[in-house]
Image (spheres, rainbow, N blue to C red):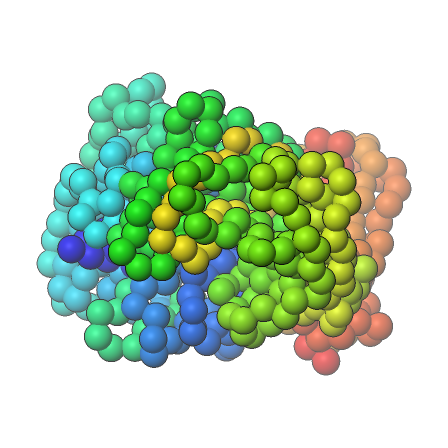
Length: 494
């Protein structure tokens, strides 16, 4: 019944396929920060980073999706997790979730399985193919799932503790299986959820490259948007057809159907849609950006237009309202911009600025996050999104260009010492004369220091960074030339 949930309900991974055609790497060791840019579909979970681990604890949530900040991926990938509670992998699942597909590793109390589906239309009774299974007696410290496209086929490798346990090939896979969001799922049917993660390492090709704009017309069934919320109905009730993203459901209880676009974590953005409802549709429409169900900024449409935010509470703080006519509502644009520490919210209806407001003292979980849209809290869904247009600032995180970091003519080293207080050294190498930029950013993407911004001759360089004027925390340093760019993470402890 909850096989699919278990499938995505997760814990950790392992190594990678070096022969795969992969361009980017996301490597997170949770050395600091507050999991900014990640998404947790949790109502009551306590989510925090401490002692080099991500912790998710909840006494009431029975299933939680965890989505890293990288956005949707395509074709080849390698997904590895390391550590967990007591350094071991627990029950759960992880993998790539397409619009109607899944490729994942499932870990139960006593076994490990590799599964997939090309017609994944129900979370509670999924149409799954079991590729592999083996018993285990614990002691799993890392897990890894790799996929490599070869013609119309997909080569799958799975590892436990860096040892290959499965190698197989899926023949003539559909396009939907080649696109999707990297997802972790954790589930508990009885005991409270107590999940932790030491490290995550994802090698991938971004579905949107370069980032910055998404113009989605929904004219193909292969769109790597992620459906979530109602596990009984979301998979089969959100469909693509007629050039629209359709929401169709008559539910026996009040529920929600929401979807995450494939852009990953963002800071400033305008998110524009044309949406509508038919017949007896009774569910409010919403657009927002969120960390979890208790930390978000959003616009929603009920008897009026409301803009507001949640800060450690599911109940929103309404910052402004405006009347509107549901009959004349065609186009909606929701925009969020930041001038630290204030967020400015604006809503346009049919290209007319209709309501504005501000969020004071926004912390990092409100200032960055992943976007969401859909229909929230109702019983009759008969509605659609005709198109979506998103212009966004990608949240700067530790995403490296995998080709560049392996290239012999360009190299950025990890700073040393790290953590540091207050001075650290940053070394880099270039093999030809070129213009070089080396900058430091905070986790909100704000520039903290401009270390190099000039033409450099070929050779090795050492730059001393003094963080005396900065507060403790995690910072990102980015080296850019005309051909390459790499971002790495460092931690200042005062």
